[in-house]
Length: 98
Image (cartoon, rainbow, N blue to C red):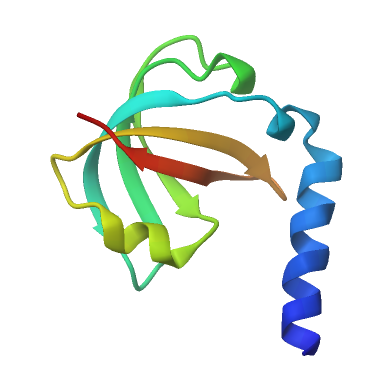
């Protein structure tokens, strides 16, 4: 129970500290690498203007939910939302593209 409350508190804290988390800032990208053990994902993506990144690049992100790493593999096209959570770039949500 304490662990669940800690996760909820962390999520609420992240939302309070990142007001743009309420915006629908979906970006297109392509999965380059999935590292489930480190809970990280490498994505080649377009600009992330809400994070002051005006150019596309390839970056490593933390996954807010480890389950999202199981739904993709290298080469998959995705739409995702990234935010800074406690100073770390984090994928908040992700959808498979076409």
